[in-house]
Length: 553
Ligand SMILES: [Zn+2]
Ligand SMILES: [Zn+2]
Image 1 (cartoon, protein in one colour):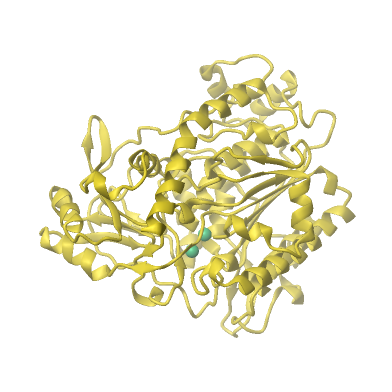
Image 2: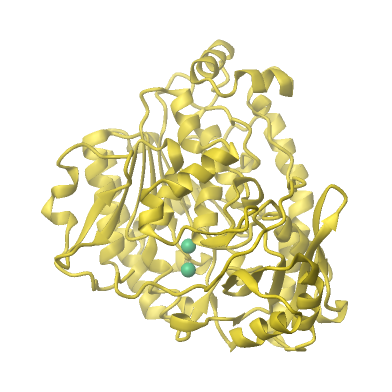
């Protein structure tokens, strides 16, 4: 990202948010699935939380069928931020294509969360838990203490705001699980300019967390999150700094990949978690993503050269054959065809006699209102706009011991069977203490981009298929070669799958191991995935059909 052009997202004031407990859209996937013998949930919990205990149990039961007799696999997980699945077909990407031939990729992979945004997406990848559990639904929201929380600030991230939220949520993290399995294994997280992505995917337990920033002298150079420092001298290499913050396409991503290489050469970290920002910005938002085919080709071919450079470092270290590569996006990228005016939505809320505490406008709108007694009236006022580009409007209301999202728009606006169920699946993903009071779902290709985002050509954030659909490729030891899966893999499934491939236990993450990617999958993992497929296929099928019909309307 150009450091002088930070994207605008929202304005806000203060107001309480109704606290509640998430009803758990997804069953916890116990790591009993990885054991030869069943283990009770109670016994399972008794060993989680202690790295020593988990390591002893793992060793004693030989629960590491994939890596038995081998050293712990290395992992390189690269998030091509906001990349679409169609980018993976760009010609002139031999390193990527080799990974695809030798690996498993998912044609129906999707974010599976709201908001489909970078902070929430990366925290979900790192924790295997959705925003209802992590409490991080986006860049900002209103919390239960009547205060708007924002993570869109390097100062706040550097002060530990995001890591504190993850700790307070008591969700397991990939980095902690790796440490529990092998106390000597290091976890490195890094990005280009997206400090909020690096800290999200590393979390509180990463050993080293780094990103790039513009300096007072106009350079663009690497730095680190306090508490996650790299070895001395690593960041001072001249090849990691440019003399301008205005970088040509591919340079920021290349710097991030170079930082990954330099770090590996010094640290030999087992797990490297990389965020590459340029697919999202500028290629996505500014240039329209798939609309700019030349830009897509340039950036993908540039990425492929960087991937080759990284693989070369692993090859020289003699560990390339023992390295799992995960290539994916955190959300999709939807070209914009129609725009909804922010003022229409704000005025509809004002007419209900209340104001907004926090608000997000993307490929959907998420609103936290001041007076909880006016939520329904405000939602109905948005519905009464009769804007043909608004697909549905939901109000979050008390239901039983928690809250549920109630649709206030008519069924005639939904074009595919099952869209209500698909929307509800996604709404549940953030239906925790920090969830918005009102959600306005826009039709495919529709967004609301106020302020500095007015010129954007593409966006994400909502439920539409193009905002949800992501590429996902796994390749490496223990992964099936040349396999194409239609399973609707989600962000919550990534960390459990990586841990499974490393032969490490799942410490109670919400997602499941993608058993169909594994050469040898435990029977219970296969069964769990089959069961999940029955629930998730209708979700993605409805999102896809709704998308097609909205685009054709
Ligand atoms: Zn992103
Ligand atoms: Zn974005």
